[in-house]
Length: 100
Length: 395
Image (tube, rainbow over all chains, first blue to last red; front, side):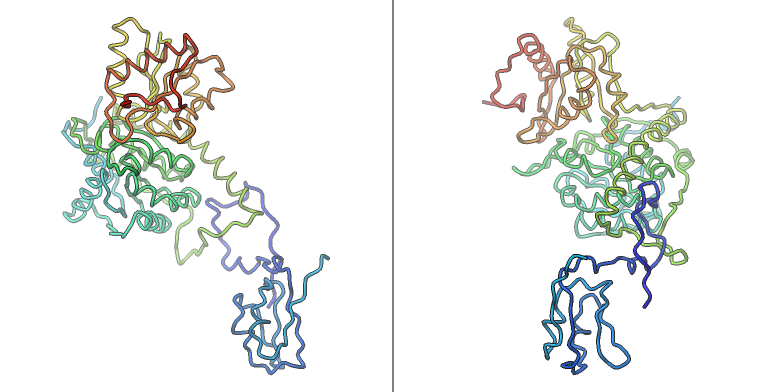
């Protein structure tokens, strides 16, 4: 899925009355991935393609690829680690984010 | 010039008449003393077909205001009322229509807060609502309760305002007392408050998102926009009251004065005690004291300019607070001092807490306050051990 980059903060005069948002679906531009302190890293050699990570992800930001493996969309992934906790085969390791 | 007929109405029914004439679309309210008569009367009007509105029976004041927010977001003209503990339960939601810029109109029948449990009048509930971002005004009699409620709809719905408005009426003193007043014709009020359209409503043809969250990069901008528009709303309030005066013959101002032309001492009041204060001023003047009266009609946005103008020639200002800010004294006097700090550092201001929990404030009390204030101004000494100077409390 192609995601638009989050808009730069507008000045107070540019806000719509009562902060109404007139563009539907604009929440998808919100880059919640910036909140992450740990990122999920996968070892797909252990993966049985059960989809537990996909089901448990509270952000619904895990997608299935053409081969049936799963990948987290790091634009949204907040690094909660639930996927790593739920994976029955220990595919996912949470690795600390380093400052870029 | 007064258009309409003279009737005897209790304050609650006067408010209900104003809401009926304003042709409100949705009323969502929960009964609580001393506001109950307003909501009962409105329910009766709807049941009898006198008012074509949806009456939403809710389980709490929190739900009442939530339903008002939703109805207003759909573009309806919305009214609710509450008092005391009810306003406290509503408190969380009161910030929503002001930030979403929804022109909900509410009347508060002011009541003391527990405990001890009290259904009687004071301004504790109103003072806890100072920062909710609503335009707020105080009525001192039933005529004003009616007039200000009518004006509230027009002010709230003005395209350059679009803020909720709350009219404060003193519980029991106004809500339950029958006074003679002028009730205008329905048509004249309908002409005064035309239909309105909100620029953004919940409309499937033009979908928008309302009440979204504001992360740190947007929240301060949102609040600045709200504050700028809120302060600017005063000009529309003045314009509406002027138009009301020209149409109905009764005139309102953010700060109203009585016998202030030559006054060196003034009392400052809000709400129904102002009328007794006028009688006290007359008696004090008969005793040779040049006393006047300043009443704050508009409470939010605070009328800085008008207030400063009203007190510019005074030597002594006696501020009456009908509420207590524990550990701080009176909330009104705090604001009054703040409003005058850079302008009248020389003005002696003496504060009293009066009339809390429905205690009457008598002419004798006013005289006592003026005498004590004059003594303090002269000697600079105060005999009380606490900052909150409470009048008429038994030792």
